[in-house]
Length: 399
Image (cartoon, rainbow, N blue to C red; front, top):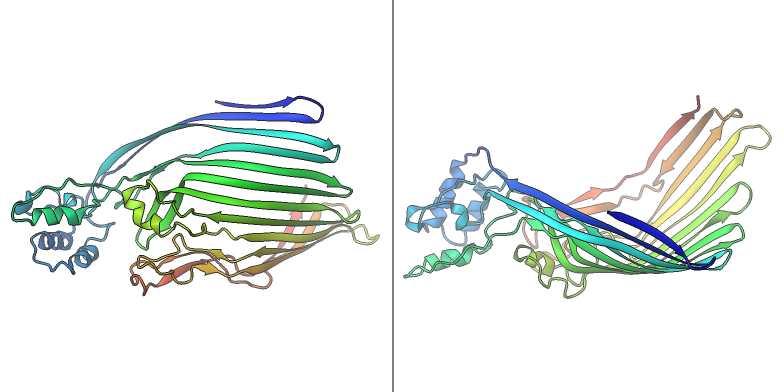
């Protein structure tokens, strides 16, 4: 259900009210149709029978029971009660679960036209991003394996109830306050806004080196301001400048109440900045779009420069040893783009020569752990490189 309304109190004062009701249901399961891994079963049996030294046990199971090929029907020794080994060790297991959530999202904005050329506004909005499931073989693994095995090893065995990771993640909510002004200044228009966004159950996607995992962080926040100015310098020349300052961060208490499986990861996030969220960014450009002298041909010339201050490219800034991960930050950079085009006098054909990232700035969008290459303090890292310098020719035709 959806509604959107504008109430005009006077010619200059108006109130915008909108709301939407969302009701969602998702059903997910992990079923293994067929799998066989004799080396994994032998490793599990050896570890549970105490034949493998404790320090070597995680490595042996991890090597021979790689999550994507480990059978869910691995069995425990009869001396430990038999049954599935996944009740004693963090191994894949089958599961089925239903996710349900509903939410009312809404917005309210008060606008006042101080003059024909100036609009002042202030608004509040509440948003919703649906939760779901981690569709990964390890997303519902046992969490307290050490405690269970320690209890069974006592002279009088102590039964410790298993605790399994929840494969689901919660819906994300956001509450935003924005205050701004929109003005027309002769040939130019200017927009200025300040904002504060508070996000709860913030959804974070992490690549651990062997799996993709989405989990919730208790809270995140982004506070900042945006300025945009654009307009005509002459009949054929236009310009634009836009700048953004945003302090996007995880509060120091962002780990309160998170799921046990995500607690260790979230603890290393709190107090840091959000991924790919530079504090300063901007763009500036000029465009000529008009005649080429008196020839009848049209000429288009455009150039723009994009700027980004340094930004984090990893999901989590600290490694499991509490030290910063290598290559976490992408340094500040400028990227320049240009385009020049000619249009025939009858406007049927346009030929454009263009280039992007002309200075060939090599930047990273995401940095993550290389799969199965090193541990805390000695990790190999991979970077997903953004577009290098590119150029080309575009031909447009009207028929």
